[in-house]
Amino acid sequence: MAHSHAPAGDGNGRRLLLAFLITAGFMIIEVAGGLISGSLALLADAGHMLTDAAALMFALLAVHFAHRPPNAQHTFGWLRLTTLAAFVNAIALVIITVLIVWEAVERFRAPQPVAGGTMIVIAVAGLVANLLSFWILHRGSEEKNLNVRAAALHVLGDLLGSVGAIIAALVILWTGWTPIDPILSVLVSCLVLRSAWALLKESVNELLEGAPRSLDLAALKRDLRHELPEVRDVHHVHVWLVGEKPMMTLHVQVIPPHNHDALLDQIHHFLAHRYQIAHATVQMEYQPCSGPECTINDPQSGHAHHHHHH
Image 1 (spheres, rainbow, N blue to C red):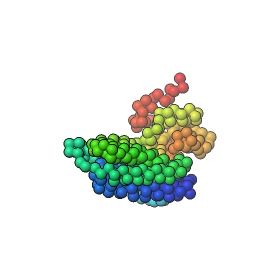
Image 2 (cartoon, helix red, strand yellow):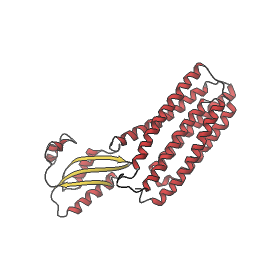
Image 3 (cartoon, rainbow, N blue to C red):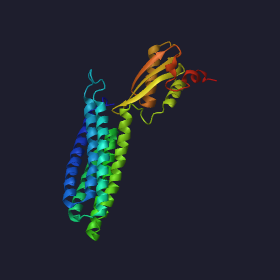
Image 4 (cartoon, rainbow, N blue to C red):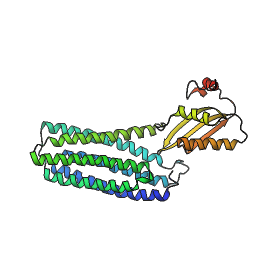
């Protein structure tokens, strides 16, 4: 994937870098503003901006590492590093959320003064920063780069966080009721937790060599046998992800073809076009699979598949 869009990827990289700098810069301003004004909602929004800055950074890393050639030591290049970074980020976000909710509970017990004026200035600035990042990223999303799209969604979610902080500031300015600040900080934390949870699920799935969530292996085997009459049986199927790119190995038992390579090409074509698996290693066999390990993938494979024409 990365090879075909090299020029586009660089445009993506520039846009991502710009959005990252804006977001990271405003995150620092929001942390400072939250500490100065005593506003927890601003700190929670800064936590949310951290998720965005991190998402933008992974997207940047992914664009960067996609260009770094694989070497003998790392045959996939460095793509897995982005997954590891996402995993660490998700855990950090959960910790931040817990700390903010903890502090919010403390503040319900003993409300603290909040400087509404300072708070609203910084919250509005944060909102503008988010709109700017979103606009920069959105111009680039026609390339359908997963990372850029994910980053744009993050920034959109962050708009809600800034809006929450603005509402809290307005309530404090108009009514002086400070508990609105911890209440909204908890709501913003829930947003952070949602993106952290999604990130954790995705990255853990990749680190555990899980199959892509959208992939239905049973259907893939069925379709392959359907599509190519020479294919009798599909077994030893393994699918995993390296930096969002699916990798696959499979054994295919076939009726001896006239042209071995042509059939192999058909199988690769089927996987690439029907299932978007560009990197597959196919072992073709003429004998039925025998032995206990044939049934590892699905208990019936040894028997059921041979009778599927009845």
